Image (spheres, rainbow, N blue to C red):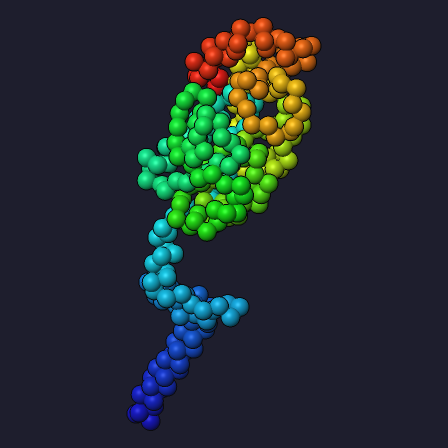
Length: 277
């Protein structure tokens, strides 16, 4: 009987120990799961099985993904307007800017354009010159365009495959700049040019100076009796006119002859900055 208190104390201690163990197990069941730190998380994600059968990128690919090289994105820039509005000058200005930025640039003109006796040069009305590749169809340039970052196209309305080529080149990462008339002397649309508008990133319509009243001119009028739609010419064939002069001039041929051999056009072209909006 002397050892009974000792047995009781040992029994109480054992029961108390069991209660503590049971309570700890219950508390651990309600605790949130252990989450690794950021470094461990990245390892878990990289080792996790791919989704939809895709393969995990290599460490080198991960590095490129984290630090992109910003490849050049293609784009179409469209410059439209009547004749003598400075479209070709604006085209050359943009091309020279890309050349300063160390971009390889290719200039293309249509073979039909032999104004100013320059078959292999783009010559503007204010006497700027730059070499251009003369072609009949733009698809002939697909083999060499891989060597260039930027492609400039002058007189785009003459190319039957303008829309197809520009879309293809831009999708290949090229910057395509097109200078073109948007309408004929009858104010009818050049379909290849107009259909390019919804495909272009930027569209700018320039205005010329009206050869009659010296206001802003948005239209081109032919001053000869030739009615062919595509007729290459300059001041001896065409005038830039405003809406009022286009609609109200009864006899443009006679009016043109009354301008003293085109002296008014010469005055306008002597100040090329006036022809830009």
